[in-house]
Length: 113
Image (cartoon, rainbow, N blue to C red; front, side, top):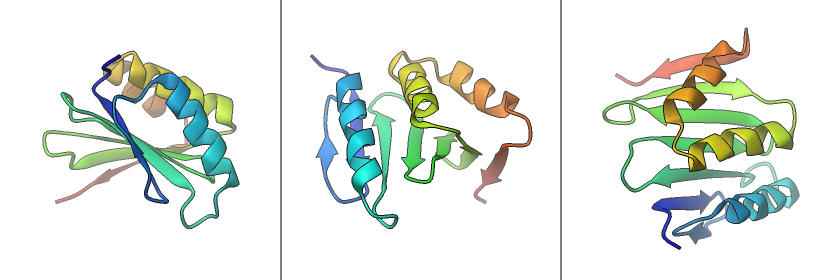
């Protein structure tokens, strides 16, 4: 199955044509990983969106023409993490971005440039 989604893990492993099951594995590995390497991110070969999560439950959504904008929120649990990655796998990028922005006082927007 070709998904056009890749996963890069903070400890150096990567997965091409990732499935949602690969996300579940990456979450389990991240939970066990040390703080320094406890993160992973996904990207899409055809879209300019990246979703990144850290062991401390910080979630970053990177977007923009040159991936020059990002928003960050602190999630409450790993089920929330799965929820956002499910939207990513369903290519609901605008919905994902809006849902992050709708969480009051929990997000910040960062811009490079």
